Image (cartoon, rainbow, N blue to C red; front, side, top):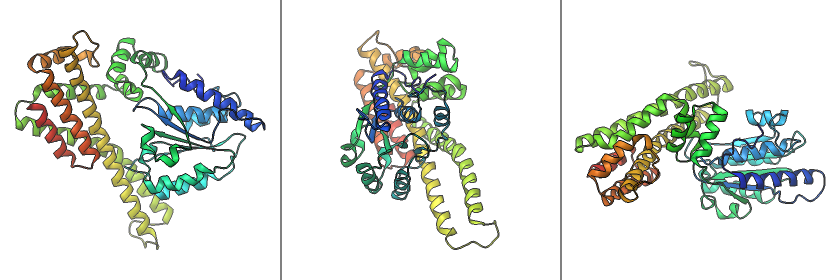
Amino acid sequence: MNVWSELVGQEPVVDILKSAVAGAASRLAGEDGGSMTHAWLFTGPPGSGRSNAARAFAAALQCPNGGCGECKSCVTARAGSHPDITVIRTEGLSIGTDTAREYVRKASLHPSQRGWQVLIVEDADRLTDQAANALLKAIEEPPPRTVWMLCAPAVEDVIITIRSRARAVLLRTPSAGAIAQLLVERDHIPAELATAAAAASQGHIGRARALAADPEVRERRRVILNLPLSLRNIGDCLAAAAAINEAATARAASIADDANTRELDDIRTAWGVEERGRRPAGYAGALSSLEKDQKRRRTRLMRDSIDGVLLDLMALYRDVLAVQQAPGAALINADFAESIGEMARVGTAESTLLHIDAILECRQALAANAAPLLALERMMIGIVN
């Protein structure tokens, strides 16, 4: 499989990037670079494969065969160990100035091999204004063999001074059929399960893979989609909100706690600190900075988990509205057709829209840093009324 094989349903984007790879090869040979440029902005809905497209492009730029998928450059790029491909990501809520400046210095280095110095900024929409401004100079005047690749949901999520200097590439939501085919061919998922997972994922390839491969993920989805039918009164709403909040907290802790322990051990080793030993000057500041980063990561993991629940509920009510207003329309959650039909019979299109509005308001409240439990309680009460 070549480096482009996992860009499901993105044929126009692949054509653009292949053309740029050819131009990059010409530029290395001292000829006109054609459509190759030094800064790229990959945009598209969640799950469309923005970072996958950037990684594939980065690998193809390093590959002597334009992304064969088999040479040393492609293999190391796919494994995340290529010395001239740097992925900048955050597990917190934002990417700060210090991080940005660190990678600006990296961008100034000459590539160690024949290709390009590539820096991929995942979640470029999480750059603070100060961090974005720190990147601006490097993007405006990069070294001749440095390429920046930024990934964000929409061009408007990146400050105008950066997006005006980058070539935008828009990825589309892949079809359920294309995702199902990928799951069958690459992950050897049974066709029926792959089809159901692809439909339920709403075009999110990672979500489809998790649903198809992990029974626990499927069970969580089942519990979430059965939730609206269990709500009868205010007490049920408060209990449901608490259950979602507690489950999200537990999932965040299961990921964050192990990482926190490793990072704490690493910083103690780096500073030569024993549990009861003397702490060198500067250690306290480094430890405080680490603890703040860890807290931000835990918060992001928790809110991402809650957001996944909200998206599932929104898809459910979308199906209810489809049954009410467009009988015969394809359902996202076809495996819950019986429950969806019952909800459609007991409600109206107007009440369904109000329930969707309650979910959207909850997402907006969480984005504005509202207390998750209070936002969830308000949403549940809005659903039951």
